[in-house]
View (cartoon, rainbow, N blue to C red):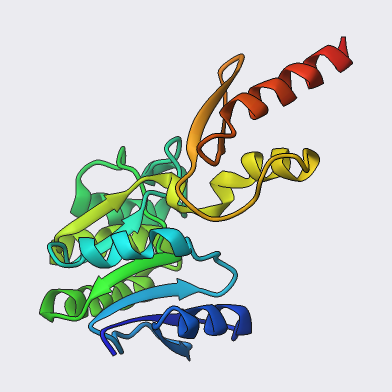
Length: 210
């Protein structure tokens, strides 16, 4: 099959069912592999951005890999042990670099993609912090990597979902979300067309607190 999901860890029937209904291949394994021409390597417990998958498959037409950035405020010097950071510094020369979310990793089945996975597993053996090992493998193999925004991770959307659950008048459903400024530097996301409802809801919440 051309595109598919390789789930690392515990089997999740909901993901298998959704993948098959979407015409995607699906496998469960304890090890990273490339069973499909374009594979989403997904760690168990990570939510799948189903609406964005078509974009990810398209990215792999030009890139060897695609994965979201982990956190904008965290760099390689903020995680792992001192020893592993030094191992990483030897390759990167600078630890002031952003890290990647290996939990949601799209890889094309080619020599570079396979070489990266092999190198990553080898680097994990040198140090247990997967994000630093991932970074070292990037510098060793130098794949063409498409860095996706943090918003591809479902956890980033919690604020928006909480607003939806508290206000049943806001419609639910899939689709691309838009950013809404609700004041005081706070940003939430909602479906297009719900922006004014979101703003009105938060204004009412502010009034109730006064």
